[in-house]
Structures are given as C-alpha cells and as structure tokens.
Amino acid sequence: MPKRGPAEHRVTLSRQRVIEAGVRLADAQGAEALSMRRLGRELGVEAMALYNHVDNKDDLLDGMIEWAADEIELPEDSTDWRRFTRRRAVSAHAVLMRHTWLPALWTSRITLGPVRMRYMDHALRSLREAGFPPDLLDRGYHAIEDHIVGHAMRAIGFALDDEQMRQLGEPMLRSSPLAEFPDLVAHIRHHLEQPSHGEGFEFGLDLILDGLERLRDGS
Image (cartoon, rainbow, N blue to C red; front, side):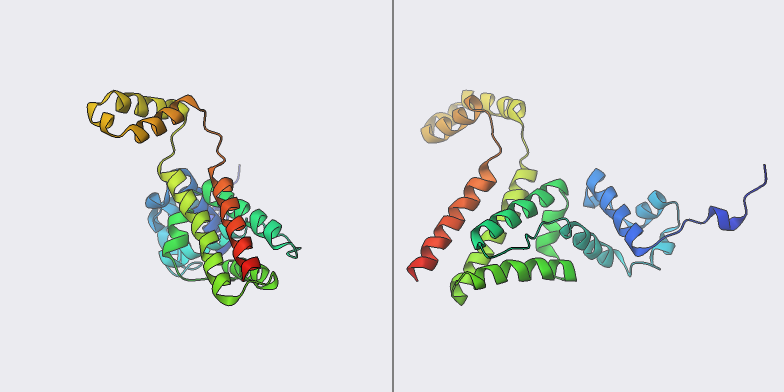
C-alpha cells in the first residue's frame, strides 16, 4: 500500500468547522472545558492553526453564540404579535436549554453578530407593529427576554428530576429548623407529591404576554 504524503494528512479547516467543533465540545463538557489547545486536539491540529480562522477565544465564543442563535425560529408572519412572540420565545428557550453553556454567554457577551441582530430586530418590530408605545415596547421586550434567559439559567443551574427532588426534600422536611416555616414546608411537600410537568416557562411567558396586552390596550 503506498505511503501517504504530507498533504493527505492535513486537516482541512474553516471558520465554520472550528465554530461547530467548539459548540460540540461545549455541549459535551461545558464552556469551562473549552480552550484553543483543547479544541485543536479535538480537530487534530495544533492550536495555532485555529487562529487562521478565528481571531482568538473571544471571537470563537461570539461565533458559537451566532451559530446557536441561528437555531431559533423566527416565524415569517408577525402580524399576530402574541403568536409570533410566543413561538419565538419558546424556540429561543429551547435552544438555550439545548446548549447549556449558552445562557451565561448570551447575557455576558455584548458583541452582536448579524444573527442576533436579526433576532432582536424581529422581536422589537413585532411589538412596534402591534401598536406598543415606545416605553412599553422597551420594557415589554426586556421582560420577555429576561424571562427566556433567566428561566433557562435557573432550570440549568437547578436541574433536579423527581427522584433527586425527593432525595433533597425528604431530609429537609425532617429537619427541625424547617418547622418554623410552614408555607415552605407546604411548598416542598407539593413538589414531592406532584410530578413535575416542565410547564413553568410557558406559564410565566403567558402571564407576561397577558400583562403586556392589557397595558397596551389600556394605553
């Protein structure tokens, strides 16, 4: 069998391939595991080769955010602002939950690429075209976005299934200090007795949309 030449051993890189590899690594092990050296090993190249495609780690992270943001559904018909906003918010929340490294970066990195710009512009335009006055539009937009990201961060940071909740809650109920807080006891018992349905995000979203609709109509 003929021996392979050096060209046949080269790994063909592109910006897209580097960013996708970063997403895969962060999905599997978290953003804290991501380094240029580690990413180079995953791709079978020296870390320095990555700098031909991304400027630095910050540029890589910004590219990863853009890559994930492109998964968010932006319905084409935004004439029904509430339907549009709900679908967009549910899709954005699902993307944040799928890429558990994303919520913290979404809030901490202020560099905006074209995908995030398009996401924000669609969201703001739907509210403007629905007749929201500027001040309510601004507060409403941020209330929705804060709920999307904040709920994802809480759900990821406190991700307990029913069995883990039982293991945590039952010893708490037996602890004497908890007897001083009867409503907290009732709350913990409710979680132990009622299976989780995963409806918290959409419940809160509908409350926000109901409130915004009333405020818009009242104004």
